[in-house]
Image (cartoon, rainbow, N blue to C red; front, top):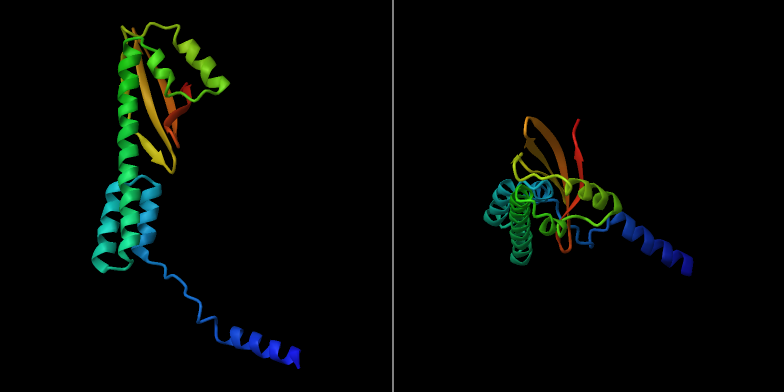
Length: 173
């Protein structure tokens, strides 16, 4: 008798298609928002957020959560731009001590940076490329015109709890 009751309950659940479970719909705008958010396409993510607001497809609490995520990401992007600007200025003034706080303390990075510190870059011109973002990482090309030679460096940054860190830099060539 117990087996029969159990079988009836199990069949009822299976045949009803679990309709009593609340399943969140996949909202295309929300998917697009997270995709653009992850790729640091913040203007597109803002547009997606406005569409979500207009369609009223999620509740206000969820919208506020998305707004806060976007605001934080915008702040993080600006922070990296400031760090890179500072690094370029400090490199051109040979003020390496202030740059070290932005470098990940791996042995390889410390050794590489100690080599860079041996050079007087005050008479060089330093140019930077456009920052490319992906998830919690960023990459930028740095050019150093040193007398009649040009050196190309790829700088790799990672966003961690306490901000952006330069996790790797290597010369192209």
